[in-house]
Length: 354
Image (cartoon, one colour):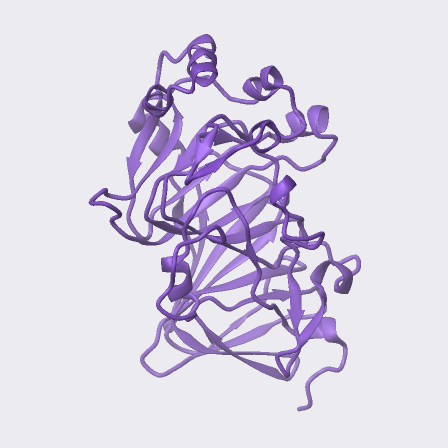
């Protein structure tokens, strides 16, 4: 059988797509992607199947920063995914993210806030799937999520005004993490990723952020970096100040697997929290034997997070290893996965919608 000649009838593969951020990281990400021993720097994120531009202000690396570019069969650059897919809208943004320092305390808008203040139909609900961790300066990896009970907006605003970072950090719940943990972060929930965390982040397709710390990893953040297009008082209003005890918060936002199907060397699961989102859905395929996947969504992004093997769609066979990312359009009705002998091929399937 000859492969289909319509490019959108084949899995779409991508060139590397590292993005500048105000924090540092990258060692675990480089190793995960097979790019040498790794080093930390200001390009700690790899944006995957992205049609979203990075909002980096004066730190912008160019007009196309953040946008994924297709990789041709011979390894040469193809067009931007945004230009290639036409009406095959993905409406989701995925990233690999590796932190060497704690990120600034921040939040993102929900859709209502984004419509009112950013003139955008997309907020930035996101989810974090922990792939690997490392101790940095003896510190165990952790996340900060949600305000503790009793935090008043006025107290938070005062701490921001005088940049009392210890007070700001103490207002959020601190959660130790290990590989396999996963959390949903709804829009407006305050959060920060601690040092030593490599994750797969799945989110709404925007780069809106309000971050309240003036400095991060040797970078002094400008007002634009901190507040974006918002006035500071409007930015502070983006935070959800409802406090929540740690046990209640983790019970509500921790993402757990629900089995869709299991047997014959294949486990097909959906990952979701008690709080549901209609912005995206995350499924996980873990395969030790051949499996034919017939997606029930019209299009999706596939991300290999473990193992090795190959996939075949419309007659085209593509080798797979950890870190490979591909887009599947509505012109592909089934994908045959075949793990290498002795390998567990793990693929996360990301689609927009509930």
